[in-house]
Image 1: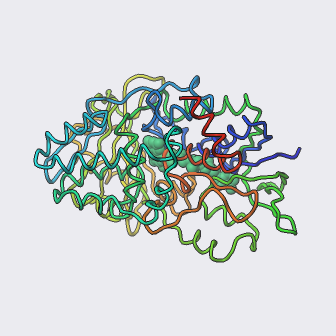
Image 2: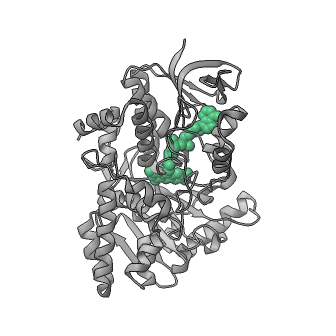
Length: 479
Ligand SMILES: Cc1cc2nc3c(=O)[nH]c(=O)nc-3n(C[C@H](O)[C@H](O)[C@H](O)COP(=O)(O)OP(=O)(O)OC[C@H]3O[C@@H](n4cnc5c(N)ncnc54)[C@H](O)[C@@H]3O)c2cc1C
């Protein structure tokens, strides 16, 4: 059977593309190298506790928020139930050396008030910062299907200003700058490098509303599976794509799978890491300059992770995350230092059957020069948790860990980077269109990391195929 489109990779972006194309009547093959769709979202269970690996919480899932609209369009809303994180403090910032804690409440106005309470001298800086975040968030295409398109956003993503430059222009207060930069951990790029625009489009969604999904990433994966089946997408797992084949005249022919099967198709959407996509193409398919640019793309920080099962409930993490910084300077070189000098992100792990948190996940972005054995990493991370989060000491039970090579082997990141390719000032990430007619790109490298970023990348790629106006019009109908 000839397919109209083959989508490479069944992560959020690939499943999104497959659903959109199938909705418009195309015959779609969705090809995933892992044994099941959405391997990053499914996580794993130990001792009755489920550990999410690629999804903990998100912005934009409030009623009428961008992810809520995209989910409605994709038919996922009947399959996933979201819940708000603690509206009085969904993210807790802790700076150990400075002995300072700040809780982010839900909503711009509440954040404004709480920041001014904590930094009364900094009212103008706080207000200007939140205004700037809001302006960029509200003008981004697809985040706001009703807004006029803002072509300047793409420009600001490459040329800046960076988050640091923006904050430096507003205040000299290093502690405040650190608080406002802490969400860098959600996209793995330091404030010195991340475009302010990109930061605003991600952090702005969490400021408005931070929500989780009942059952975590695996519920979202099941919702996608149900919709893929319903729309008749030909899902093929456990047999990855080895190559993208091209006709002798240069047109796209189809894809070759690892077992040698060839699928003929009129178009391909690749959602894998752009360097992996390059390896699938025949030598002359892209110009040397494009290959060099893709080959040189910098990845986000690598990370070490700790998974702990607790004998007792962990109420302090119910609907709440901890962002711990040994000192305010640690945000600047995000992930470039050793474990003990890096920030720590902690989130809850819930009982497998649902219910209260009974464990936690710790993530430390770090570039250890010579990565030690996993057991040693686990012991060091346990020590860091005891030192910086004494309230979690009693929640340390059976522990396991993962290293950047885990992300390399099981994720979609050749260098072990937490969120694939960086979005940084000065780096031109690939767009959805390529020089090979019929080959489109989606995925976290193209738009932004996160479930929202990956889903958006699917819409942007399909907008290039179907027409952005057409897609946008339908999205507006889902508001
Ligand atoms: C530890 C961690 C925590 C995270 N926490 C959150 C969070 O709380 N909230 C949030 O919104 N986001 C979070 N993210 C980010 C989010 O999970 C990702 O940005 C998003 O899922 C990426 O989706 P994607 O489709 O772009 O890529 P992927 O999910 O990586 O999809 C690409 C797919 O391609 C497959 N593939 C690779 N090579 C081939 C091949 N040759 N043939 C066929 N298939 C192939 C891969 O197996 C993979 O399934 C987290 C990520 C990590 C790593």
